[in-house]
Amino acid sequence: MTKAAELAKMGEVLTNSQIGGRRNIVINGAMQVAQRSTSVTGIGGSGGYFTVDRFKVDFGGSDGRFTMSQSTDAPEGFGNSIKLDCTTADTSIAAGEIALFQYMIEGQDLQQFKKGTSNAEKMTLSFYVKGNGNATYVYELYDADNNRQISKTFSVTSSWTRVVLTYDGDTTGAFDDDNALSLYAQIWLHAGSNYTSGTLSTTWSSVTQANRAVGISSFYSSTDNEFYITGLQLEVGSQATPFEHRSFGEELALCQRYFYRWKTDGEAYSNLCIGGATNTTQARGVAQFPQTMRSNASLSSSGTFRIVSMGSGNVGTSITVSINRGHTLQPYVQFEASGGSSLTAGQTAEMGANNDTDAVIDFSAEL
Image 1: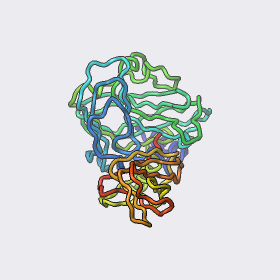
Image 2 (image 1 turned 120 degrees about the horizontal axis):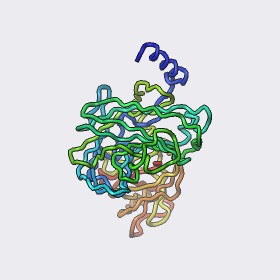
Image 3 (image 1 turned 60 degrees about the vertical axis):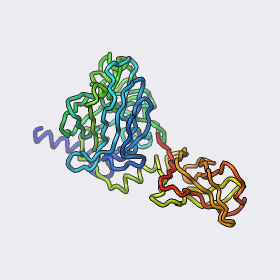
Image 4 (image 1 turned 120 degrees about the vertical axis):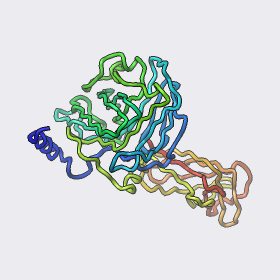
């Protein structure tokens, strides 16, 4: 690039306010936070969030499987990446098969792109990738509010490489200004002919399925295949600025808006909360979240729990845990014993793990 071109680019960066303030819309782009797990095997068939926070995988139709992990293999300046390691190949690709690596964004966090206006801003994605050999994948931006999309291919080699992809602004279809899903930023890792038989849609347009993933390699082509990614950044404008590093504490707090795992941290009788017994088998308490969650949270749990009726010392065991009333900030969490009548209604009650250092309770408000 000539000096004049460099100066022009820097002028655009300043005009778009890319130097000051928060630039990166992506949370946990350096792959630091992994509340759920650092490694999960046999992923495929059914999608979801498995390891590094805010990053999801989605599937359709394929028999391929992989291990997903938080890896310490990372480019200079980063401590972590996400690693996908193919463990079951799928070389017979049916028309409707897909495998997607996804990051999803609320509409209220996208308003600076001015989408749907005559002044719509360009979007620039940058990230570091590597594999164990040459491959080509597609990074798609999919507007869930208006059913529009744009796709760009990128290459992967056996060395860490920074990829920069700039997408034109879209003057059609504004993002909703709310806390619901508006934009998928997703990598096509595997796709059947339903998604690859057309011409790649490199400009914003209404969705034509055949144009979404044209030209990609299949991650499932061999059990030798690996895929690493880190340093993901989405920002306003056509210039990729240096990755915006945030502290681990900041990233954790941002992630806990979407997902919070309560765990015992090695204390076998750790308490989630203190509340009160509502009858002989139930108690309720208010869980204190470290962050206000995006929306009413759902709850899942694993492990062994107890209720202690503090006035009498009676203990209820064989407990199920549920949210009695969803609320963004302070839901009632209900512990219920499956049998017995040891609790005393109206007494203060402790609720938590019952001699179980591995007990967890997950609160999720994911997109």
